[in-house]
Image 1 (cartoon, rainbow over the protein chains, first blue to last red):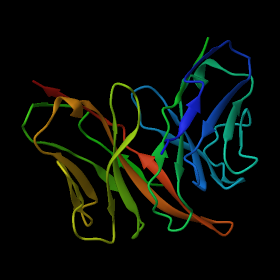
Image 2: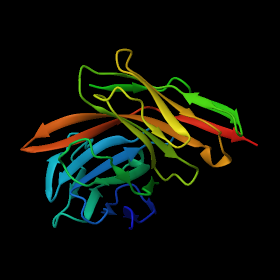
Image 3: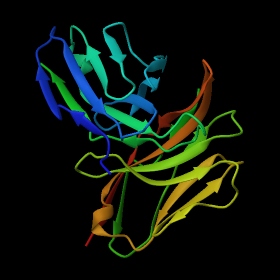
Length: 116
Length: 120
């Protein structure tokens, strides 16, 4: 079946603009995660959804970052008033269920964000 | 907090040879999962192999196998019969169990990655 998809794949924006990054998880996957990956580094956890509920947002760096998953499927990560330090690859991952908790997370191709 | 350390920033190997990538982690948890992910030049993030900490048997997946040493907190990846398509950045990741709000889920912490180049 289809994997995790993300759009746009590349986004160039000017400092101060808002951006919205979209994630479409694997069909039927209950759990959805957002990660941020700086160049040459491993991904870092941002937030986690179980269905439509945002269960963990401990990794969001500040209040300019928010995420939603209103119908328990597609998710949007929004960055307001972007800054140059927000430039990174933003990855989405999904997994089948919260139980058992050790389910593999399947990653999307990522959105590469560049803030000028 | 968990930390994952990959001490080899870069490795290279000849085609058809064997290479081992190192990973150590620090945790006070007893039950957890470990993963190796591969990131080729396309920058996709692809699962290579996973290991459940409560299983003593090392996981294998075709040419990929792990050496899991729980007491030493070590989780190395061995690639046998290396192929040109194995050229990629490899990330070791630790999954911790979180229980919050009636929900169980796994939280991944990644290492810094090892760039592997397979030469013809």
